Length: 506
Image (tube, rainbow, N blue to C red):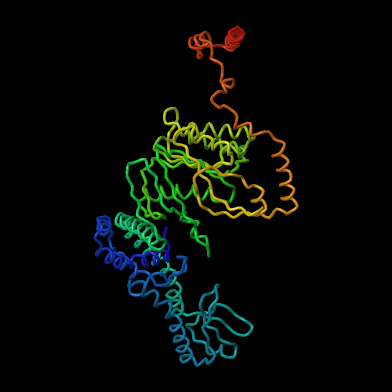
């Protein structure tokens, strides 16, 4: 399906292969030596294309002008006929004027008659017998001769035959190159791999990346880690690096609190990216890094409503969390951002706490490395309650009602949510933020001490489902659903309800 310009582009790429192979010949790395062996310079194909195709061919085949001069003798001959046709016609016109003595005799062309000799009325008496009249005009006569027809066939036929011949030769060229597909693909794969390695090397050198230690441990220890994309987007300001210590022991789950826009999501994403980069064989944006291989990285960051499918933000969030809880293992890295925010405060906080407990507990749940960002400050109580859970927050400097994000992650829970201050930074009018502070102070003065903190979560037995009576289980176990008729099913349901009601009342 390649067109002539594709072939020229291909030839241009092939012409670079010998130089690339020469550079590789000096490398000592086993992987680069292997790529050196796999890289075929394909010089025969490069020469073939260069000899066959014009340097700047037309895009469309029907225009001709594809095959290079000197590649095929027949093409050269037909092309010569096409280009020399004007000279041939000029010579014939000159010869006929001399033979007949008709000084204003001209050879002209139209689509109806092709080429013809035109003679004005004043000279028509001098027209020789071998001229064949084709058309009479008020001003003169039009004639043809045998020699002119033969010349016409030669000129007009040459163009059509040339187009057809060039098309055939081009298709033959494609077939010849297609027959070498295995060689081309092997070299393309080697160049692609080399391209990836060169890109990773370049970005590591330019951006001061370090070589990570990668092993089978459960560690994810990063010193002065950075986000590889965000740091490139910060023009004129420095990216604030952060440390991370994660493992399947004492630092299993980091609960990260802090205001919006402070950098929680960036911090969590950079850790996931560093783990991923290390495992693909790349240097990483950090001063030091130790990565224990993870079997998967699961993330729930941001919210994308699927309104067309009737799913709310909360439904999408819960679906994704469910997939994580089903598929993650103790060797996974899980990154969760703001779980439960799409529903009421108590519902959302309860879900968030239950998810943290399940992920953090190696005995009953997953026990995997987890980064968990939340606005539910009540969840910070989990440190000390569940082993392996540690609190961190993004440091904020506050002056009166103004705040500055320090972008530095520090131990301990956040002391405030700073929601109104962030709203002010976002451009909410001063009258609105001042009123918000008044309402907040009134609420804090009248509201009782946070009831959630006083709850004994382990003692909430009233929410547990009552045990199903063994009698009901026996009946269900003995039931053959495959042979049940609709009326029998209704009767069985009635009996089941009756048994359950009696058991609960008893």
